Image (cartoon, rainbow, N blue to C red):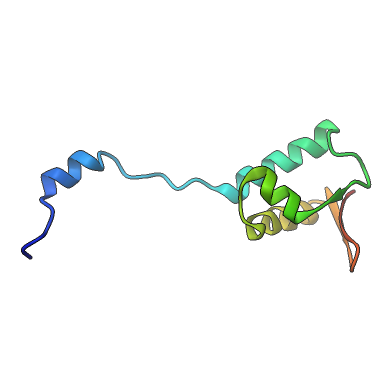
Length: 86
């Protein structure tokens, strides 16, 4: 190819491989830490939109973290009511 970037230039720019960060796990750990420490009280409602804005992540990331917390019994989900700290 005529406009191909030389390998030595690419190696200089990208010196090491980028590590993928696990956002879901990070958000999960932060919310869990807030529940365990008592910052989030029992019965307090967790609103996905607010959490996604607070952590600057997508709602899907929040949903995944909340799903894991639900499996472990830290939160409960009530149909048409929302998600609450257990």
